Length: 597
Image 1 (tube, rainbow, N blue to C red):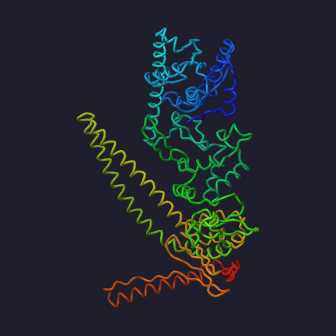
Image 2 (spheres, one colour; image 1 turned 135 degrees about the vertical axis):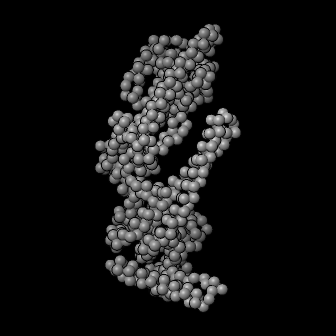
Image 3 (tube, rainbow, N blue to C red; image 1 turned 60 degrees about the horizontal axis):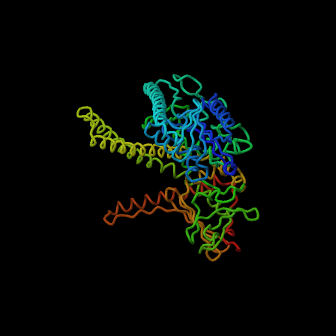
């Protein structure tokens, strides 16, 4: 869809304050090709001359890239604004509206087009068609009905031209879709737009290619987003290293540039995985492997997950990077409200947001350093445990996916039966309703299958990462990174925290700090002050509920299994995580669990 040049408040105010009768020249073009050609110049030159010859003040309103075939220009953009302003009395009703031809106003079906024409002249407007210099008013049409008949004929011709063009475009696109279905390369330019990182300059029987200038910056953006960096960071990085595409240049600003809004929109675009999605004659089309992909389906699912759940900025932007703030993970143990990060005398702290906002809870805070120091062994343990948990989750998702696929096959079979019935007995309201019902069911199940596919890919990504835990610890968990709240690698670490940690509950009672972590897989870890200035750690233990009717041998086996699991877990915690991976960390200081204030 094209852009619309909107007039500012000051521009409208200047127009309305002038007492001279005005001629509003409405200029519209629907394609980029027209905008770069002579369409704009042709439509404005005659209008300016006409205004000068008739002593009218020239005012230009334009809709760029807006089609009149379905009437969008009369409800959206400047023509719609103009009509609304006349109806509200903001623009005098005796104003003149200049158009090159009636097809600039509308290319809708003749009844809708004529209704718009009558609406304009009934408001009191004078319409001038520049091509033949004809003038239409309510009075002239009433005195000379042939003017009305002429307008109807013009609308009929305009609509027929647009319909013929639309049919021709649709036929061409359908032919390309048939070619694509055979596995042959296509470049479909006639419907929708390709993303800016794609080069579609080739013929329609060749695949689109990577844009020579904009592919690399988008590739960098995807990589940075996957590492956990936010849109603010990624936008600054691109503006420092790459020129923005023309579509990103904003006329209201002195200098264009990469924008956070555009990048957020970009990372939700399925073109990143190579998919092309568009609608033709009301029917949606989803073409896999149409574009060269920038990421895998798993990475795309991860991008959406990060976008929805990882937001470290809860207030004013700061260079300090908390590991828990802005993700709805860390909460106050007194009111269950979220805790947010803030800097106090250069030190990062977590504060109860509800208390800070004047709620019934106290505005108490805790040093981020103690919370994040306790977090690290829990995080690494969670990754190691998650690798084993993932397999069962993937199996469950596979089973659910198979069930949905069976339902989809049944629905498609029912659709075939309805089509056969229509072919034999003709279309009826009952058949149409049934087909639409099945079509809706098909869309719902297809959507669920797509979500499951993304979730499976996300689980698989987590599993792969868990198996590379040593590299993760070395690259993201080094003490130099944990101890420096301004280290940019903490952005990446935040994302991995979100994937492993379900919740962190912090409580302060009788000057004693208690921190309870829970993994996504459910296991709890508790760090709490014991006797000042000491602390203790409570680790998860597995104790099965033994059925009352179990035999003595079965009871013994349950207990033996629990004992072995707990023994291995203690070895994992003390020897692998804390001794091997975190041996370079300073010891946890028990005094931090007993703050003076």
